[in-house]
Amino acid sequence: MPIHPTAIIDRRAEIHDRVEIGPFCVIEGEVRIDAGCRLYHNVYVTGWTHISEGCEVHPGVIVGHAPQDVKYKGERSFCRIGARTILREYVTIHRGTEPESHTMVGEDCFLLGGSHVAHNCRLGNSVTLINNALLAGHVDVADGVTLGGSAVVHQFVRIGELAMIAGNARVPKDVLPFALIDVEGRIAGLNRIGLRRAGMNRDDVVAVREAYRAFFDGRVPFEQRMERLISIARTPAAKRLLDFIRAPSRRGLAGRSRRPPREDEAGTL
Image 1 (cartoon, rainbow, N blue to C red):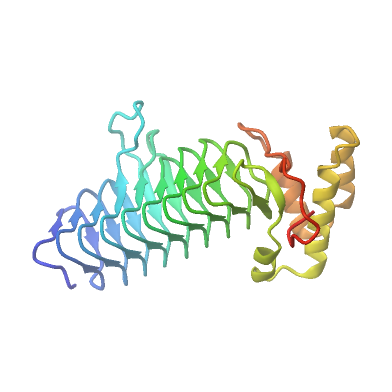
Image 2 (spheres, one colour; image 1 turned 45 degrees about the vertical axis):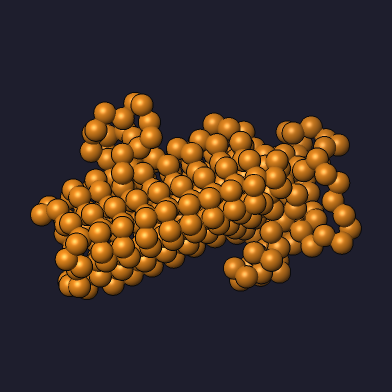
């Protein structure tokens, strides 16, 4: 186990033999780090944190520190980082606030420099946070989501799968799956490039587009729009969209962009 002599490792920590720990790292508490991880210099991992196999943790990263929440009184809570996730410079990820609660980051995620994941957030797999993206507490981010640089997400917001959030966006409400989100946190279109890259078939893409059009048809009352959406949601992706809309929400759903879409925009609904 290549541990630099300046690193400080708590006796309670469980470090696999195939973990590399660089200069001036501090591992404090009942931390577990699995095989194949590399911690560059000046990394701080603390609390009841588990970093799964194959992760890269770059200089200045803080994982599992106490939440920035005045309600937290030092109770045991957890932080989990999924396999092969990359945490770039000065990323901060805090453990849960409530006793025995978790902050969770999924597998194959890429969190770029300065991004922040607050207490009790749950990130799915293959999530990307561009530099300085900030998640407040209790935010749920589904698989394949990308947040642009300096995007800010309000606490308790849900972000559906394969959504793409613009840089500098403020996101106060739940984001539907497959959406492109503008700087006001509103839906500007479909993330068609993301859907293609994720391998979604043409039938699903067409069904999602039709579901969006039905849901955002302002000419009819909400109840009729939901009835229409239920009747046409027959593919797996469209059904997941419907399930997201039906699920409980503490923030409400993001509406359509105020800016009229141009005809040449690929993501136009």
